Length: 91
Image (cartoon, helix red, strand yellow):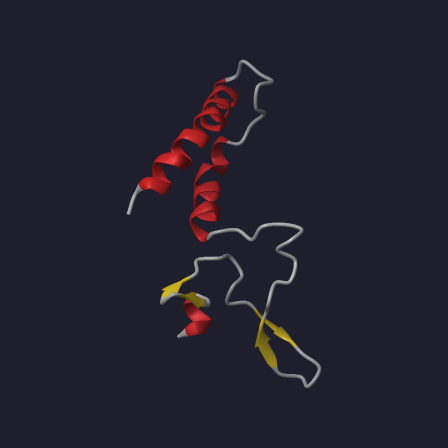
């Protein structure tokens, strides 16, 4: 089931977006992609992708408008660091 849930570290499946992605290799077979670019950018965790997807209908400019959607997204961006710290503390 590795393909369905992604690779594991210490018995826990990683919830990295694209971790189960298969790509063609020289012999024509498909193999799970290994990301060698982590030094240049960080891969996305599924929970982040899902949260962004749920929030996209509120997408607007941040700190640039007095419109309702802009105020909602600005507040969400300002609250994000605190919310991230609270989530990391949960077991």
